Length: 448
Ligand code: 5AD
Ligand code: SF4
Image (cartoon, rainbow, N blue to C red; front, side, top):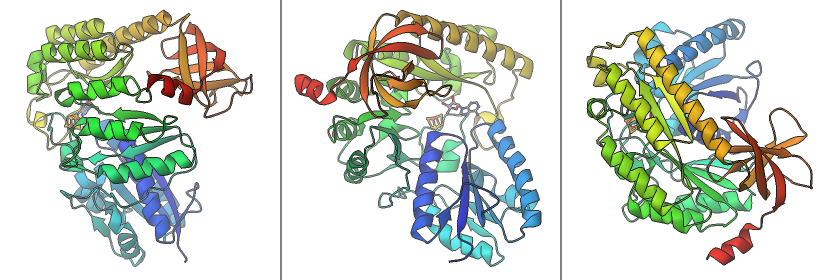
C-alpha cells in the first residue's frame, strides 16, 4: 500500500490520548503504518482540544507549520481530529485551506474512508455525534508498557455552563463491563501494571446492569498486580458504594480527582455544578472516614463571570479547608455555544491573572506542607522507570499518585512494587530510600 504513513500529535486530556490509541488501532487494521516524523508522513493528524482558547490557539499555530511542509509535499493530507473538529468545522474548512480532513470524536471508524476521499482531492468530513458509539469492539494500539488509559464511557450530560465538552463529545454512553474486563486481562498478560479508567464524568458509568462501583470492583479483581485508577469524578455521582468499593480493594488507588471549580455557592450555581460547598465538604469527610489514606486533587477556575473578590476568597478558603494533594488551576476562558458565553466576561484579565496566581501560590504551599508531613513514613510505589533527570535514580508513584524518586540500586526494575521510606520532599516530588521489595500477592492474600 502506498501513501500509508501516518503521523499523529495529541493535545488535551487523557481521553484524547486514549482516542489516539484507538485511531492508531483503526488505521493499522487498514494497512497504515505509524511514523514518528512529519517528513516521512503521507497523513498528518492533530487530535485536538477545545477546552480553553489557548488550547485552540496552539493548534492554529501548529497548522501554520504544516502549511510549510505542505508547500514542499502537496500530496500530504492534513487532518484535524477531536474536539476542535467538532466545534470549528466550518472555520477550519473555509479559512484553513490546508485542512483536508475533519473528523470528530464519534466518527473515527470512518477515518480510512475519509482519508481516501482526501487522497482523491476531496475534503474528508465526519462530524456527526452519536448517542451510542463507544468503540466497544475495537482494540486500541498500545506500545508495551506499564500504564494504560482505558476509556470506559464517552460524552457528558452535565452541561456545566462554562464547558464545551457536552457539545464537542456529545451525550453520555458507556462501554460494556465485559469488554473492559477483557481489555484489562489482555493488558495484564502483556505485563501492564496500572490501568486508568477514563470518562469525562466517569462515575456516572452504567452499562444498564452495572454501575461504576461494580465496574471498578470487577477491574480490581482481574489481577492483584494491576493497580486501578480512574478520572474524572463529579461530586454529584460519587456514591458511598463507590467509596466503600475503593476501600475494599487494595489495588484500587486511594486517590480521587474531584473538581470543585469554585468555593462560592453563588458561583457554583451559575456554573450549574449541581452541588453546594456544604455537600462537597460532607462528601470529602465521608470519603476520609471510609478511606483513611485517601488523596484528593481538584480543578479550579478563577474569574468566572460575576466572580467578586469575596467569591475568590471563598475559593482560597476551600483550598485551606480541604488541603488537596494537588490541583489543576485555570483562568476562565469563554467558549462559544456554552451558557456562560452569553454572560458578560466581566472579570478583567488582570484580575483573573492575579486571582489565579493567588490560588496557585496557596495550593503550592499546601502541597509542600502535605509532602513534608510524609517525611519519615513508608510508602509502596510502583517503579515506572528512570527519573527524568538521571539514570542513577528511579521514579515511582504512590497509591495517592505522588512521584517518588529513589536511588537506582538493589536490583530494582521497572514494574516492581517496592516499599520506600520518604526522606525529603518538595511541593511536587517525594524522595526516598529503598526499604524492601513488596509482595503484592501475599499482601493481597492477607487482606482478602
Ligand atoms: N475555562 C476555564 N477552564 C475550563 N475548564 C473547563 N472549561 C473551562 C473554561 N471554559 C476546566 C474545568 C474542568 C477542566 C477539565 O477544565 O476546571 O474541570
Ligand atoms: Fe465539562 Fe462539567 Fe461535563 Fe466536566 S462535568 S466535562 S466540566 S460539562
